[in-house]
Image (tube, rainbow, N blue to C red):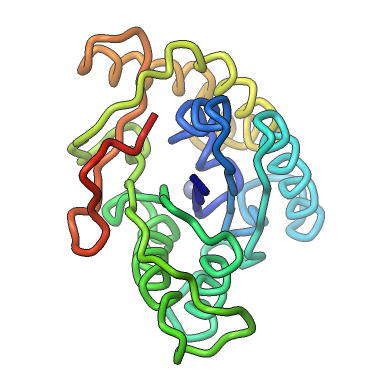
Length: 233
Ligand SMILES: [Zn+2]
């Protein structure tokens, strides 16, 4: 399969679904990791443009750990809106990645960028199949299933499926540590030890499904996105 994972910011996929992406990669699937925002706002000391460049390199390094393609839609953080130009950006993301399966944020996750990305992925993955919605790329041939990844800290999220990532927890943490500038930011802004956070959430989700470490997902329960077989690894 072709897997497209879309996070609002450069480290969201690492925090919320990197174990599953690593597992997909080991099974030989093609993976595109997209961060919509440049990551240009989240730091106390480094200015926007410089920060965006650092964050792009960090995301590329992390993606390379599992042989995934890394894509950035280059929007400024906290300036993502559900307007026509942004919708076209997302449609072209679908038309170039051509996913069989999409992973993205829950629409109720904690911050506006995560919420708007969730909505744009849902809308654009349908519109991308309409040949009369003209953009620079040809229409995609399917409306793919969407799996919502866990919310940050698992708040207000009801999982419908779990992925056992016990063999991939170290790889998930290593991918997170590729985002060194985020590790510093999360400590200074949120008083968060992010690798401890990742491990705790994975352990908590693991307890729910009877394995040492897991990631949680909820399928988007809408026609024509449902499939008869399990798709997550
Ligand atoms: Zn984020």
